[in-house]
Figure 1 (spheres, one colour):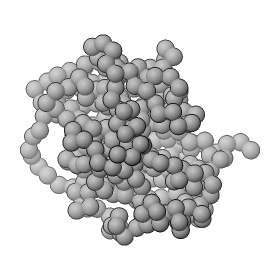
Figure 2 (cartoon, one colour; figure 1 turned 90 degrees about the vertical axis):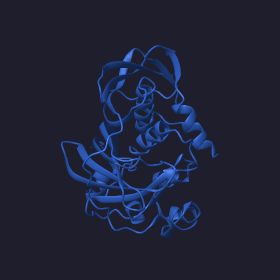
Figure 3 (tube, helix red, strand yellow; figure 1 turned 135 degrees about the horizontal axis):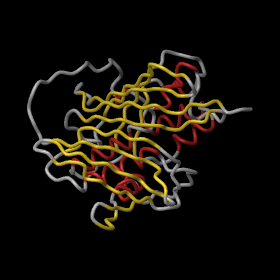
Figure 4 (cartoon, helix red, strand yellow; figure 1 turned 120 degrees about the vertical axis):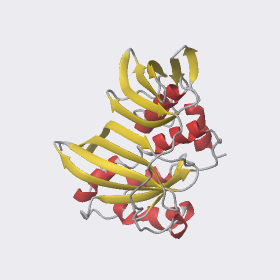
Length: 286
């Protein structure tokens, strides 16, 4: 198992401190703040540790303060309700005595019912796109340095962008972006692990899609970017170590904020999750 995936699984293995109280740590990889997807995934894991026989179907979170990667994060779970079909949990992530993130999550027993979904975009299959080796050899040398450093780093989530020109050209384009994602190696069979890994991956590229229309990127040094809130709905079973198409669009940006949506599909076209996020995309003063 690659180190990055092993580190992610270790990050999700929260330490129980007391009933409804857990401690999580951050990988020491030199980041100035905790990656938002990590906090989402850990908070979801903390909530899942207090629910039995039900899987998460939705979560809604707010980023309150930047996380300090050098300090453990305490996750305090409040058991709001356990009903006949649904359970609700509220999670507060705490560092230095202050909440840095809050999350509400809902869980449901397995049920049948009506079933429909929107279609998957017509895009090349992941096997038809440059793999990691081809990216390093042919495409990374063309990227700006900040983007190149990101793609050169060992990551727990493998990315295959459908339109790699997004990171090479500064031309404004239609605010849509698709990328194939999966864990870089096999994961345990526990569905909770797959849900938390998908929650982690859902925050990687979504905010950046709000800058596509402006020919900009979160990698630009004159852009201050940060997730403000995050919502995720799980629709159907999936594995986070199989390819998923993350189709994103950004209906609006204004007031230094960008709004983005995402849909995650299996290669055979099943819609397994939906995501929405608003983030800060503030031009830095020169």
